Image (tube, rainbow, N blue to C red; front, side, top):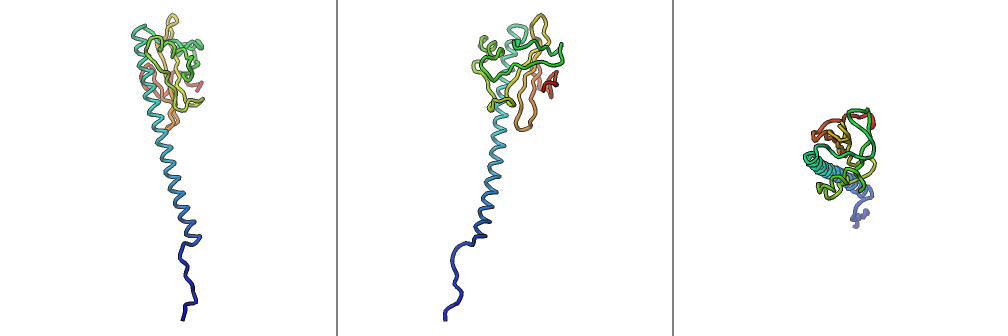
Amino acid sequence: MRSLTKYKKGFTLIELLVVIAIISLLASTVLVSLNEARAKARDARRLQEIKQIQTALEVFHINHGYYPNEGNCDGSICASTCWCWDDLTHGDSYLYKDLRNEDLLSVLPKDPINNANYRYQYEPGCHIDGKAQYYDLRVKLETTGKWYVLTNGIPTDSPQCDSSW
């Protein structure tokens, strides 16, 4: 006698949907991890490039006795509550021109994202006879969402003026 029930080999629709859901979950986890790793890599590049700018600034200071002016506005860290930044994202930056003319910086460092939120910024201050004796250099880090600030080469939590941030 033959069996009345026929067995078909294969997967049910529910089983396939469960497998697809598991694969999707794993793929999204991998993508999130990959994006975090990319952000960390961009932050590492930012810190390395800001150190290059810092080194060039210190050599400029040794050679001249002052730091380069930004040229865009007369913002003194000592004399005013706020000031503007020399944005290093374009080739006509005053700071870049000064450092390039001294052969201290051959290539303009650009933030890996290089937009309004992520860029390198420089502000000289404490001008004596028009010559900067002080500077803040900053870059925003992706992983923390905070600014990394160097004040005369020393990492600080914030620059001298924070109301324009």
